[in-house]
Image 1 (tube, rainbow, N blue to C red):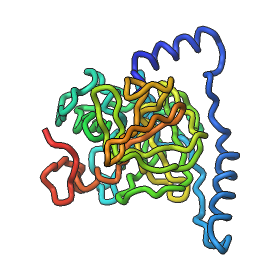
Image 2: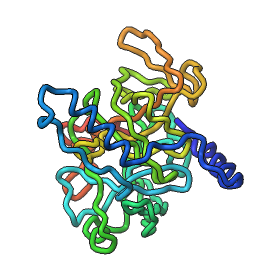
Image 3: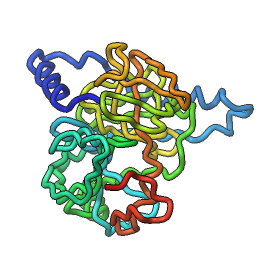
Length: 296
């Protein structure tokens, strides 16, 4: 994972230098055109290609040290308290320990809500951390003091819907960073059986193709399927220096225990398993049928 402190210091250095971040994101329109070309040549008929969405920043949020997004699930009610998705390692109280699961912890954290052009239009506030862990996955979910309907009415912005099915290799995706206000476009390269970084291990992690060169501060960004506009994962880490299984240098471990290091490749944690753990009123129920998230 990209440590929040490192991301914040990096931001200050960049701001002080008056220069752009070292890794520039692809220009959004060009990224969509490239993805469309991949889709149209994948099948036997061009007309069979999914209609691509114009991925933008609407519904993403900026944290003090990370990125995130206002999310809902397929069955969430418009009147339910809105939720924000980010990483477990972006939690304001520090990294959850291996095996630790945090549920319904008080929080007054604020988030900058962005519109499609990445302009901050509002400050949203949490009243609690509904769920957070760095075990098996790397996720934090905050409950806000407002509803989806109220956000839509006041700012014309809808929450991003979390897809409830497993993502597919080859899918054209966009990582939307509210912290940096930039989009990274690539494809799902595949999946790591286990991704180990320092003391933490994550299961069935999503691997990007090399075009998504995410950096510190992009942690917690939604990974959006270009064809559906839905969230399929949450961006969280990358192997920066080619080291093996150290912090900021995750390694892949297969079912037989074989270790693979992919320097310069970045990863996200899938989110399809989360919707089954919430009611239509966005109440967490870790005992619900089909809920496989780690429990306290």
